[in-house]
Image 1 (cartoon, rainbow, N blue to C red):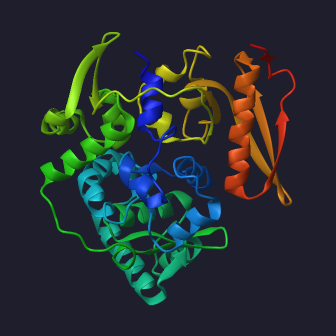
Image 2: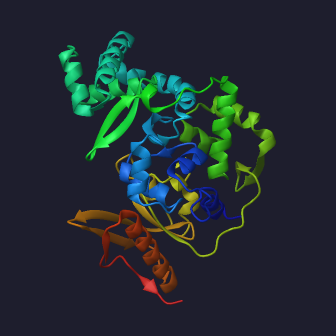
Image 3: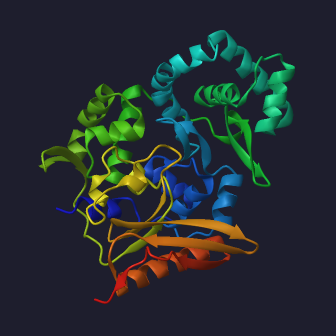
Amino acid sequence: MDIASERLCRSFLVRSPWKTARDVVRALGAVQAQDYDGAKWAVSQRTGLGDDTIEKEFTRGAILRTHVLRPTWHFVDPADIRWMLKLSAPRIKTIMSSYDRKLGLDEKVYRRSKAVIEKALRDNKVMLRGALRETLVRARFREMDGQRLARLIMRAELDAIICSGPHQGKQQTYALLDERAPAVPVRDRDEDLLDLTLRYFAGRSPATAHDFSWWSGLSMRDVKQGIDLAAKQLERFEFEGKTYWRSGRVPTLPGPTAHLLPNYDEYFIGYRDRSAIGRRLGHVGSVTGGSTLISNVLVVDGQLVGGWRRTVNGDAIVLEASILARVTRSERDRLEQAIRAFEMFAQRKVKVHWLSGKSRATTR
């Protein structure tokens, strides 16, 4: 059994029916967007869309960006954002409560800050983060440092007051959720839990209950309930001492592939145990570090083989690629093709530097 290759198919990296960013985000449930540009590249690899086209979808609100699930920033379909927040926000608040106490934040402070933010956005429609900070300072919120500001804004997101607005230049704005997302019928909790469970496994199986708990931020009790609700649509099986669930038939595994994946791509970030993609390299250190250490990675046939990074140099992008596993000439050629796809996405010339001493190509 090839867990990694099956996941490669499920995550729409080799065969995708989707034509828009919203299609992909809805199919996967949510797409981690802590690195905004990386998240757009993740969406592009599942649609073939360019950066500008995805940005236009974001600008008009076809996809939204907010803190949800674990939590971190995710792209979410506007039709899903409220029920996902309703499902995940209570646990997030409980987990974050100890941090709130250290910062002197309680429910009274949050109620007042949300009222101030909501009024400011009703008057201004969209606001930059710095403008929100100035508004809160004028409202006499004390010690408005980056950490406290982040918590006040996050709580307004979790309570479905605000979400992302269109960018102003390169800067993020915030807008009222009521202005960006349509009202939808309220479902009971079991329906929400079933929906999230099915979308997770449809886009990421085979996966374990612990994987689903990691991705969703839900307790194991809720995860088990979700799996029970979806039992008729999931297959349970054992492999290498672990219990997995999969959605639907085993897909036809792909032929030779190569991908230039961004940090936080759902292909690996959607699992607590990412070891399935590290068999060739011998480890998965590049995708298991702390939040600032997750790397952009090179993947051949579903397996990690190296990493990459980019810098903008005028009108061009300089891409440094490092291959850390032995690859064949044809595999190296496929990686070159993946880089050309990135060039098409960015609509800029990409100059590639294969780092000295790191790249080892052999002929088949």
